[in-house]
Length: 452
Image (tube, rainbow, N blue to C red; front, side, top):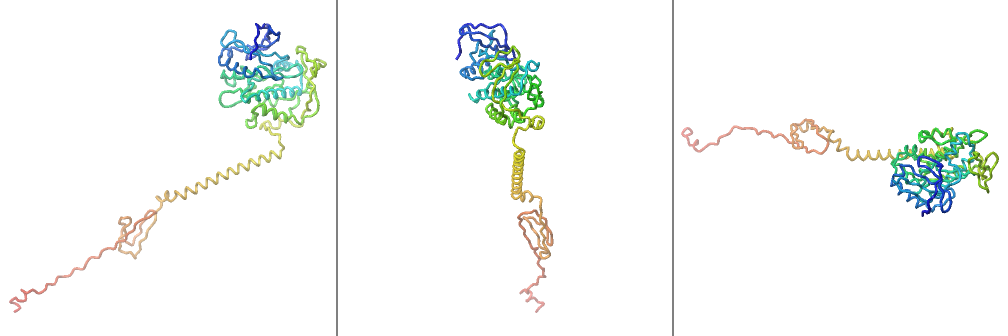
């Protein structure tokens, strides 16, 4: 659904500029509404895949309505054209968080932790609502540059349809951060601007609020762990106080410093944030001391206070100053808020599970070894063992034949390999005794003349 307009008039000044492009205020000729046109940078405007992804996401979320989101109106222009691509959306009243952080760093603004808490709660709740639209729906480009802080410390999220378009540039995580200030989690494969990315970007925004400045090129991701040590609760008039343990643990999970316990979506982060702040009690005021250039607050629950203060009354809790997260457990970045005994029990349980796994492995190895020895040892060892057969004097003179081969005459000792053999004992044949022949008397001899 696109809203037609007749030659909208562009106001001369550029209201904000970052890596994604320039924002310019435009006035609709028909309705007179003041809108904001984001003219995308050259790298985005020249890519036809970017235009297709942008129009598809705008079409999907054109009817999405939420108090903390600037309404998307339409996409103007075409990829590759001289005018480029522009995203037209509602123009909220207020100041970009990036500009506010620059003012805080220069000392122009003063704020306390209740402002941080209120903005973070609004941000997490609004992103969780977007994630409920679908598992594949995410902002993808969250950062101080795309958040508007209203005069009464409200929060409005803008340009929430650019994530799929930026993916088509196929840039590295370093380029996405340095060129567009888009923080991406460390993971295998090409960067994905999904719901997990949104939770990391929530953490980056929260860290910037605690530091009172925007993160630089060198801060992310290399110095995130060191910046946690510097992060404190801002408290005008009393200095900076340590961040409470519960809030610090939640921030570590949001920044995904421990992959095992990191949040996968803003829906998980919202539940954990509620639990982290549940123990806080007591009414307090969210105070944001502003410069005169910030627009006036509206009437109603928001009232203008003295010295340029815009005070938004709401029920918020007292600070938890009993323990700090940063100094006690920075090296391990523990995220559990369980008591010591519960953590000890969990450690013992893990130790027992590991011991059981080792026992099972050893038993399996021993069983396999026994099977191999029992099955194959006789065959393997048979070629290397021998047996001695002894043929004593009782077999004296006999010829010993083993497996058809004559081995000698007993008594004898014969070495053979282990296993079945055929043994034959052959007695030696005795020679017959020779006698002189005796001639029988013949008839001729009896009748000879001599015997007559």
